[in-house]
Length: 208
Image (cartoon, rainbow, N blue to C red; front, side, top):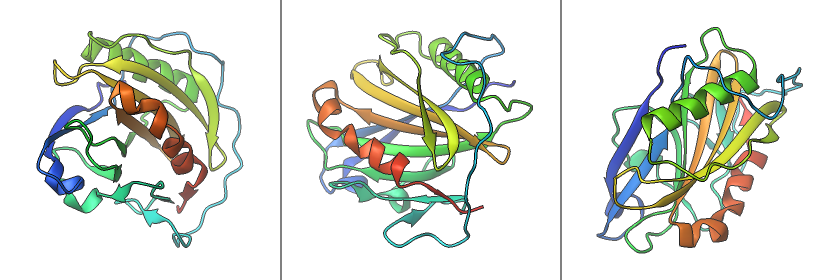
């Protein structure tokens, strides 16, 4: 599988958090041709309902493929971002210590890969290759996103080479695409906002 996108996007906090400090939004999604072990052996068969209309209280992704909620204390910041990769969803909290805790989603073709465990192994291997400073990787966790099997992992990283971030990523695949949900926070803010990621995954609806 070919290498996937890896982007460190430097944004103005005034664009997504209403203040004048510098903010870094980090979106990490990468794969490797080297296989790695994971916590399960297969993704299983999912039962997923789809609709074409975003349910009340949700926002639709940029590609119209899913909708989910904006977590409590966060704002929909998708329209304020200019990036070299297509961001499907972005929710940001107010800036704290120069960084806006955020949750973003990117989508990429899955190619020949269909097993969520294989996909996760490739993605994690790609992160480790592209970000050698990333460390303290957790065990891979299993969950579902609107009926689709998904996997999650968290780790510490230095995407801008000087600011330590605690990141949590969820990988889920549907209809030939891999969706990477990335939660990024300063270590001091990580636990306090982690429930926001569950709001996003629990509130997720596939639209096509």
